[in-house]
Image 1 (cartoon, each protein chain N blue to C red):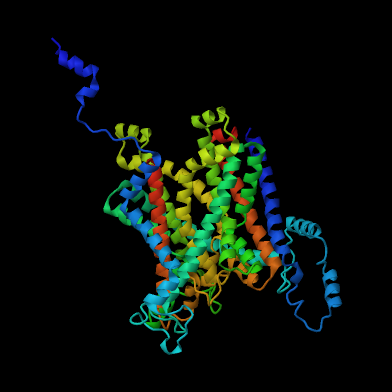
Image 2 (image 1 turned 90 degrees about the horizontal axis):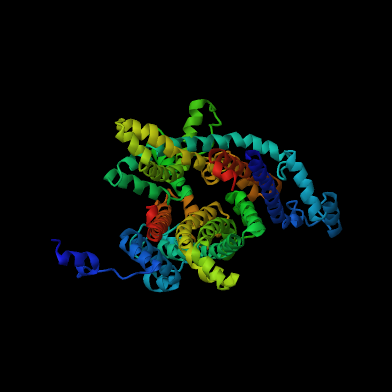
Length: 323
Length: 307
């Protein structure tokens, strides 16, 4: 039964993936007229030359042919070559992927480390000043524009501190080009962007943990545990927290696709050499092959993440399998 | 002997509690409105947003009467002014009045936000209603379509569409709505699935109501609360998205002011005037905060169990 459920979800995912590629390539198709940047700008090119060039490059083939060719390549991990520098798109992606994972992974970690205690404290001291204060911070954190926060942090920690001769944090790149690259250096560069990125996670997750804890603590089995004489500490942490964290696991699971695409704004503000920044830069340069490759890559991760989450649901909650 | 009066009391309980007041029965919407009104923070937030929207709509009037500047008026003798008179919030690098630009920028940003929400809700609710009501293969197909749209990471879709369709305010709203309607559709479909079970639907169907009538007259009003909450929260989220897109240069292009591109302008000039960085950012923050607070208040008002 579980196998059938997984098979159904997998089949659906494949269809969704094909649909995604279709949508993205249809959007890209609008640009095929000027597929090669600058081809229409050279004044010494006669119209017949342009036509010949386009035929050479295969730009006048019908859409479905182009779509199938690209899809076949993509399934082999071959996204073609960048239109700007000629190196393969895949190599670009693989170059930048570790940086992005480093950033978003750290942000998620920080988010967890901070939001769990905050959520638990909020739940245990419900209604108190502490709880109100924490709630206010969470709600506010949800409303701050990421790029603005990044900008402000750069202004304070990179520019102003430096002006006053105080130890300061670097504002761009993942490591120093000069004498850099060691662990401490990378850590220094990681601090500001990871803080900005994790702020959002902390805001959302701490509220979630708080309400999840409150729900769990009102359950009957908690009452039983207390009635049995179990110490409050054990009740809260052993029974309460462990059960409250289960929904959080699924929430984080749904964040997995964001591992790749979520940090784009932060990457651009901090000059972090990741996938998001790659897509953004190349988009501005009309490097369609790269942008397509990155988009497809990210979409695959999203779909895989959803599939994984669905499968986990099916494993954990038998009711879903038979629905 | 049991007092006759006591037996009489027991038999006619109304007589015993005579004089106690009874609340008149209220409709769900009235009750929700009362709950919302009782939530002072939520109401204040809602009023704030309406106020901002009003100011944005009346921007030309404000320009004329309050600040006496136009958003594009360049005055190179007054660059990087600090807040004071006559520039109530200072000036930017070209001497343009910040307050005026803020008001006109609000027009663009809030305009895009409300337009996007309207479009997302319309399309999303339509798809969700149809999918939830009919079920079967139609629901599968529609929900797969929603999955497809939601599978493309929003950021990349924005980038793609922004470089393909040079966005003005309206196309930007369409682009953001294209990404957002999927969530609304899922939400509405979920609600429809649960409302569909209720008896009044069966009853209405049994007296011969047609599908469209059922969907519009009976399902839709029950789905509205969820949509209202989604709309309130959505305005804030879309403002953040729009501001980010403008900041990256993918949205509204300067010199048309919007809160996002005012910030990207200020990035290069913070040495000269910190106000340029702080003021638009605070405005965005306050507006999004108000939207979130109002959305939460609306959610609590419609379904207090979830508090």
